[in-house]
Amino acid sequence: MASKRKSSKGTGGAATGTRRILATLPDAVGAQTVIVVAGSQSKPVLALLLLKIGEGIKDATVVPCHDRDDAAEIIQQHQPLSPQDLPLDLGRTLIVAALSEGAPAPDWPEAARRTGLDKLRRFPIAGRDWLGVLDPDGTILTTATQERADAARTALLAAADWAERHPIVGTWEEDPACLIDAGADPNAHRRELYEYVYPAVERNRPLWREILLRAAVVLREKHDDWFGMALNAAAFDEVTDVRDVPVAHVIAGYTARSFHDTPDGRPADPNDDAGGAAVDLGPPAAPGELERLLAQAGAEADVMWLDGYMTACELAPEPTGYETWVRDLLSGGDVLDDREAAQRLLDLVVQRFETLLEALNDSQAIRDSVADVAGADLAAWARGFTAATRRLPGSWPAERLRETDRAWLDALAGLGRDGTRIAERDGLAAWLAERAEITARPDA
Image (cartoon, rainbow, N blue to C red; front, side):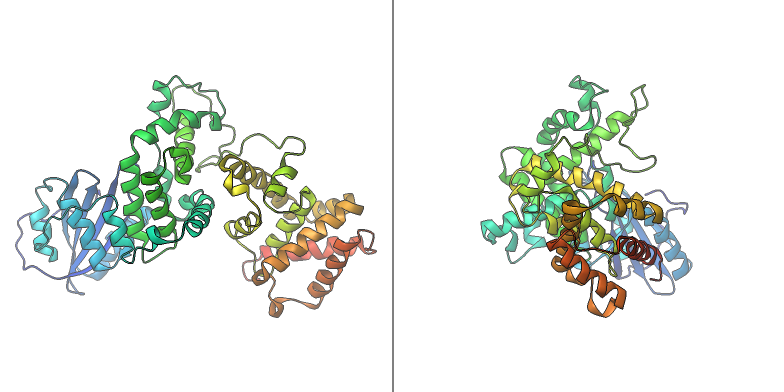
């Protein structure tokens, strides 16, 4: 909310129509910034509002602008918070709900007058009322149970990646003091700390539900993630154990990360990358563990099959995003019915994928890996590669294939049936290295 510009208080000026409303997702305490643009194109007026769930409009600042470039610069200053343009009716609905949650900031009347919002009246909206705003046809709550379960499984995968697309989600954590108060061991592995966080999430269930619902409102017209957020919000109302709400594990992960990072002498989590919201991937796979989980996911129970599958996704003419191919990988079995098994499989897949990426960045490493694999292992790798090209055909579109690509795809399909059917091992390595080089080029 801070701005280098001075606010306008009692400066006069006629009321003008609202032209644009932008809003950020709420942070972990339910605070979100709303930017209202009014006035003419040549001389706009901005109002910067700070809303907080349960407390209403906490701050209101009017910023008169010299011209449209001036307004654009102020909006640009807020880009690190990723504000989203809202339909005007949804933007007004957020403000109307905030007006009902407490006395607004003293400067709100002036901000409302200058931006054409002075006719707004308070109207309480909370909990499932937001589902009506988001989903007036009642799709979320009337969808068949199995379909909702399938959508919730998709949300389990997507929730872990929300912060990459919406940075504020990276702040969604409980106060790390909850771990201190519970006597958590600062040297414990992060996943062991989750159990200390879930009681705090339970206590704050209503707040997290509201955060998710208002985040969904912000994203409703802009990003499909709104649906997963709404499903998670609905789940907070429906389940007995918060562990059955996918986003609860994301919250627990961010909280445990902050607990490790608190500058009070605690050691940093070795799984954290410097400067980022690291993901805790847990210990390496125990013997046979990854194979068992792959089988539970309906995939071939062979790590070489997984390597081939991931290689095809990464080296494709149209590389498939991680979220897409992981969802496909887990779509054939019942692993998602077991929350802990699903999360563990995701962790192990990412561990192996990171190692694979390192090898694909080095042509010599590619040649060495091909030279080291033979027989049944090579056949399993080829089956995995072929499975990805067939299950994700958009990643290997016919119009993007070169003659050498077609030749090797045919060869690998045959190799998957008979591991001895390869004479040009060096040729395979060279083709993979070439595909790695092509996909690494931005203009490829």
